[in-house]
Image 1 (tube, rainbow, N blue to C red):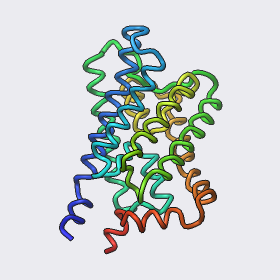
Image 2: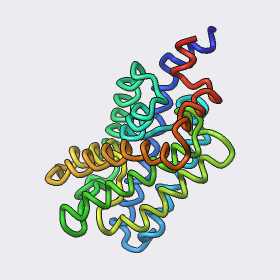
Image 3: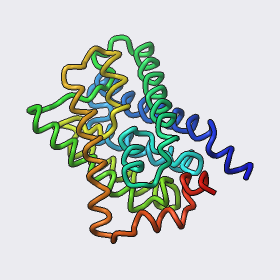
Length: 241
């Protein structure tokens, strides 16, 4: 019982904050470095950095918090009935805090950067919106199918999720920036003043991750999320017990 209480306390929120900090610092930092030294990483390199840092964080803190690292993913788990709603505000606040600390550090280290790796539409506004929506949908669909309860953990979960983020960044980066993550976009946009299209990177990921759950149930069966919660004894079940 003591272990269950500790798991439901501050440690998961600290893990989410740290993991999101690493995601934004490494991923947005890769964009900033590539802009400062053109061609040093390239689009492929930046995409791989995002995928690899997410994979590393899943293996590092996935057993503590589930390594959501993304408010849209947290709400996607909540919508799927895999996550205790009482934990959601703490997770989201921690993710945002971690993202803002990372963006602030990048601003201090690279004051010459114009956008700190903020996501910006490469084409039209609506094209960027629908690309973000589809990419977020696909990401959450993969996460729901490789996670247990709300926890992204296991031998292959990090590879699957990190690989999905990498190929989505390769595909969607030139069109929308391939954020799929409101925290990742919000922090650098606000600190760099690039807020004109910020709504895209909040609305599209939230809608896309919520659409993933009905599709998952349609393909896996109506009890898919219920079964996952039973197998995991996920956070919601732990607190009920």
